[in-house]
Image 1 (tube, helix red, strand yellow):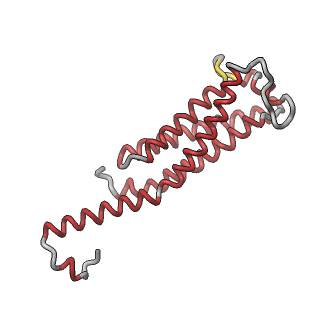
Image 2: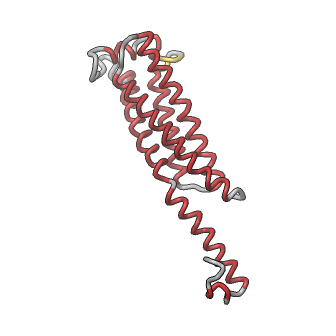
Image 3: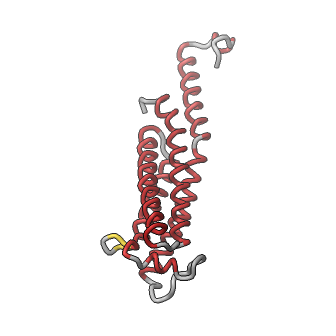
Length: 186
């Protein structure tokens, strides 16, 4: 809608208000159509992480009598998982990973269906969880490299997934910044 358009000059004030509201709603909806790609990638990556951490958790509690399938290094996965660093307070690290991936997935999925302050809050929660998961991944990968000198393919895969979740969560939050400041009254 430009000021010089003839059809807008002939509108009554009430019609003009309705037209402006339609333009504002269209702008919000257009931004919503541009934004979701990063959040959708976060959902897909976090779902993959949920499956990975779910398998490790299932193996620990149900299949513990069978060897852990390790794609690289023979028994390195089993050695890493059963080391002193494989659990916190007696709970396998995979359980914490599973909880984190599920929480990130839920925050991102719900945020895809919201707007305004709730969208901003959920996106901030998603980024906070991803940041914590990324930091934990750095810590545990460092333990593998410098303390255990063994590599678990599952752990490295989870670290890669969490790094991507973190990066796309950052991109998602940076894109959301535009709408949060354009429509602060929501």
